[in-house]
Length: 394
Image (cartoon, rainbow, N blue to C red; front, side, top):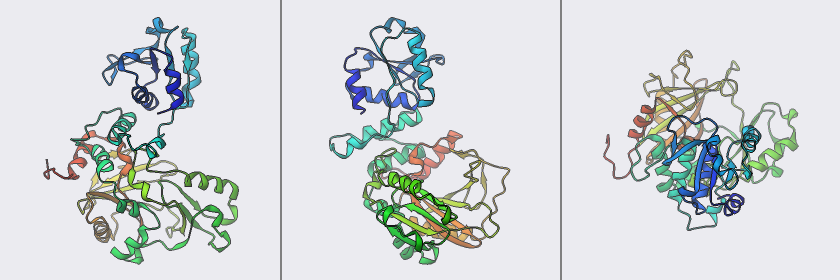
């Protein structure tokens, strides 16, 4: 809960949340948690759709709430990009008490020191903030909903170990063999410990505990060390258990930095990674991300390499012919070996020539909020996750 917003709202009987996107939805749940009831909260936008509602509340046109302009607190709950424009609009309508706070979407640090926090409620609220959809965690159906269930009830220490980009290497070595590992250049507890003089001209620097905390160094002499240090020090402070959607298995990881050899194709083309989604030890979906830097698209294939005309988060690219890997059978085999014993895991690999290199293991793909097109595919993938007590195919 944002304590500044809470303190500000205490002085007003009525609070108008202006904006009902992800920031507004987060602000709404903060208001409810602070003791405000639905009777005290009004939701408003500039131009609502007909009969638009959220959590049973009507979403009003702000200009239709002028009877509250002297007494209510208007919280402008949008990103910085639109904040000034909307503050000016509210003040122009005559609202006397307009407040534009900094709203942190992922501010869950309070949970670490408060054992009484209801994690189930927090996950449900977070899910609704990001998707706009309510969730029944006792009866999840879709893939995204079941990822939330797994966060709540299956965030084990083993999953934390295997999400650690350094510790997972021992698991890979023992299960499928060290030949699948990208050669390691070093591991350190802090940025200041890194001896760059001992590293090759090209390498990849990674934090062991997070997502997207990687830096490709393709020319060591061009490194801007102060900027790179600031970036990694910032990343090292993030606790990913509380950073985005309460992926609690990350709490078991000690942040470190590793350097791995730089992988590249022989012709210099985009290095593709192959993300194999494995359910109860069976690979059922292979995701290939294309041109992630300039025009990110994502193609989906069956284990037989049949194209699936659906998208998850990024648009699909049916015109891009991703060649069936010659080592597809081996890719599936090693994925299933690594995933044995887990309800769901995504095992990522790179293929250079005919050689498969392990990337990482991910147990909560997209933190369970990536949009599906069509939504029926979200339901279909959800049917592949068999939670305890569920009957297969039900």
